[in-house]
Length: 411
Image (cartoon, rainbow, N blue to C red; front, side, top):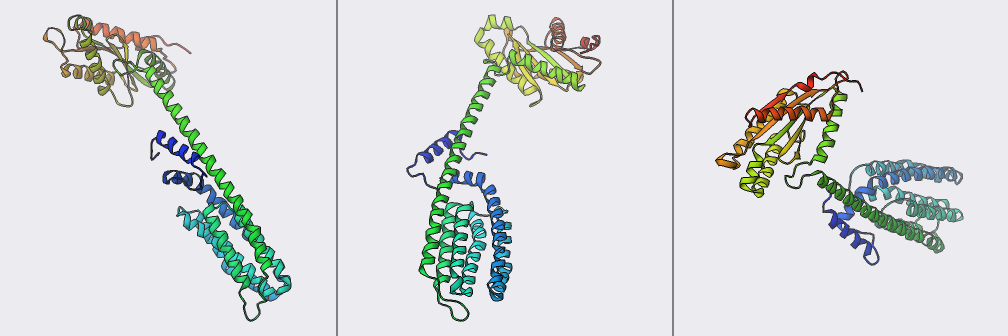
């Protein structure tokens, strides 16, 4: 659910895009949206990278074995005892909804441990093989910087940590079985080899963030267009005076409802409602009062039907229609009577000191394969019932069952 309105979001996105330098940090709301959109897929990709990276490094056990049993045993013990558990824990943590800092530590801990391991093995192997291990460590740092999809700020911190571990372990003099410190040439090579990868990582994230902003902008603009179209479509379906649906919408909705009743063997009820003596009211009290009565009667109709189920529309003039899906004859009459009583109880002034009342014609029918009907037949039957209600004294609901006795038709 959006935290801010679409217009405000567009303004914020346009401001972020136009900002000089276009940094790698967004305002808080945009940053949260970016992390929500990119974070899960990115963390899965990092997890896969860690597994592939570990598998590739395990191949070095072959080379370690050729360098002597001592180097091989140290390599095997540290990789299986430290690097492998850190990798498994990191992959599991990356799949959980934790903070980005925890994810960064989970991603880089096994990589930094692997870098330290390679330098340690290089020192144990002696000066003759040191260049081989310098190259392996440098390539490893380069690969994790360029290929792993970590956020740039954590990528930079991971690179700095890996290079620090590289330099410290490569240059510190150790007694015992460790060989001499690595030459400065090897350290310069590792740093020079890795920094361009960091720049490429920066460029990729910058492009990804820009694409995210452009995508969000297009999405919000499309939502605006759809919202405007929906609003315009609704306006074209509404009666401007009463605020209920108009005749155009009624015809479409009634046709669809009849089709559903015919195909699904379901009931449908319809009420034709007419304001009693409306012409006399208009002539005596004026059109302004007549419009006032139309508006209030329409509101009463909306409140009297089943919310979210029934449809109320202005049929024309002072006549309204209510479509009642899944309403049998009894329910249709009950809703019609509720409408009649509600209008009378509202006490809207009419002519001669009386109040506004309505008459209603009700009809309900159940569709099916052996009995099919059209919306025109339904309206005609309700109209006949309305005519009977007005002829028998008005302010009443009359039900018609004539439609139920129409002969069956196929098709």
